[in-house]
Image (cartoon, rainbow, N blue to C red):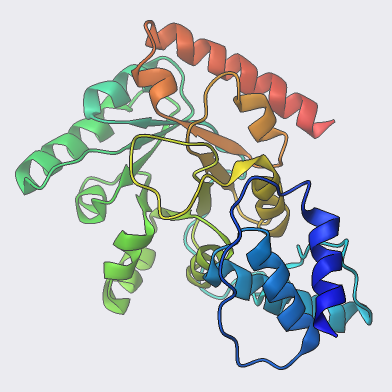
Length: 304
């Protein structure tokens, strides 16, 4: 009974979601035929186990809500994924729905350069195990955005960010997992904004449970900057994620440059993060100006 439904899902979405190697079908206690068919189909389409299970549950919920099985309708309703009802009971402080071009910079000097050149959103991603060096760099980054319109997020070093009143902090999944409930409560109570990295449906559900200020999705394209837990997600998956999570400000990240920026914004995300497109550009200020123009044009086109 499940095989025809599995085949129908695959046939409806294989071309759109091409490029991913089939994954092993994870075990499930469910005996529901829709659940099992969707689980097998999504595994065949290349979704890792955790994400395939999320999609199987969502497809089962979607079918119950619609009253019929529709293999062509990729699940994109928040309630079908078990996301929180809005408004959330204890959300983090809000930030703009569209954060625009999001420059991820390696140190405070770069942060200052991009802030003064007009980058609307900046993240300090300073890698060090030296506590004093971290504190100095975070403090300098906050000072370097003063007098500009830039919104500054501090990656990872959330205590240092709170100490100097940074606009917000950004945490990856590993950083988030290390936070105790007490620390998470402290972070929320501080009034800071929180961004969380995600790499698929299961991590987006985890992020939603915390009610962050924004959600980052990636890596969209291949990147050499860090080892990613999943394959590059591509534009089709990004568009699906954007429809599901559209109530949040969304930041696409990973391998984005001037050539790829318009197609990224066309998926419905309100921000695109860039790293090497600025730090490795021969003329970073000129590169920033080009990216800002492209972002503006892409947003105008998307809005119409």
